[in-house]
Length: 320
Image (cartoon, rainbow, N blue to C red):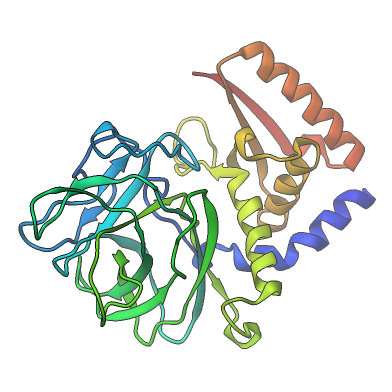
């Protein structure tokens, strides 16, 4: 019981930041789709210039990009061009970001050392391998960026690194636009690339305690929130046959767990702070039913040791 109490106290602060109104989820945040050049992944729309190609779902053979995905199977590749055009994508938010509030959003970013395409000025095959940046805009309509909200540092690393951006909009915005941009757009325009994967949900954070965009305190808190958030996916349809009104269903994602012995308990402790009166349905999806059953036994053992009431938890084992 002592361990459960500790968990509840630990995540009482995190729960504030992860309540329904404070988390805005992207559709297809890891850009999963069939690898293809000039093809916008499902859930996103192209916001590029007229008579220019859309971004690319990578890796694909045409550009000779050899990077593997940070998360899932595919990722997004965007370029800037030597003719003062660049690639952009957008998405309608499920709920708007609000003027005067502060938000954090995370990205995995990298640069490919080889990104072959054709120069818009010369028509010749060129390596779009120069380092560029990522920029985020807010808007009221698709592809109409009204306010620049944040931009990354120049991404000159070829390995994936996680970047954190802080958004503090002056207006309410229902759409976000994400674009590739030059290191200094007022000087020269060149052929560069940026790779993007694994967007986090947008999290609202207290502005008054945010000192700057590099705040170590908030970066650690953001990473902790993302770790807990990524442990589970809330089952979206409480009206479905598999869920009753008194149940809350979650599907634990084993692939994201760095320490399953602890992560299961943290995820369950977190849900308990949000929905203490509901029965928690844990969905275990595995190719191997035997593996799923063994996992269930381990989880039950850990729950007992933590003093968590098992009558408040049910299991649903599914194979795929």
